Image: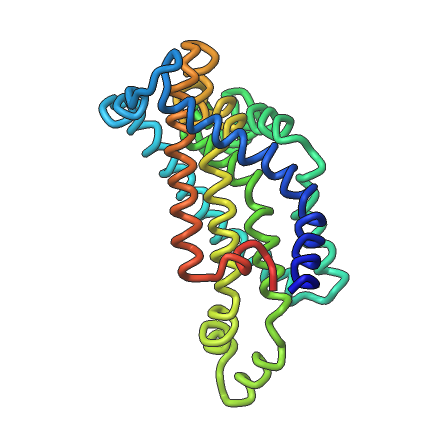
Length: 281
């Protein structure tokens, strides 16, 4: 027993630095956030949550945020799955090229990419100029300062977060299973639908959760591409702090969003274990 106690104390000492960092950078800020959401001038109150339940702007902002996040996630799955499949099945030299093109945007700041989309999609931008030059439109189309521009730019930024988990999962699927299915008379489409697609679903779930959660908290891209008309939750938090100096209201919004994300992770873990979602074997 003495030896077991010494071993536990040693393990605790080894975990101490990591626990201290997690406590300082995660637990303490979250606790401060929770306290701010239920206090006003040092007094306990649920006024901030009452405003969240009664004022339409909060509901509209949350519904818009979830709609945009869901749209981006669905498009990311539809676009990312073929890219990940190509990277997983092509010869190695071409697979490296595909993955390199996927990872390349990470070398550029999110802010720079958002401004680049503004240049491309503005009324006198490259896209409108091309459409008018081809005779497809008579006048510039509103491609930014709306939900379309926000979704497009957000999708471009978050697409790699869908492709990489999918690729990691597809790489672990034994190719012998595909050959076995073909040897039993299955067509390529039948083998893909009955063998490959079900085995790749953990990657789909992991990428879906990752992209959806990241899209919920996006700020820079909706702020620039939305033009103030696409009012997402992150912008609502920012306005409460910067303009109205309402830290309690901003904290309440953040707590509600955090609870929503936690529920999403819990639901996803019911389908795929949490360690699989985070990319572990």
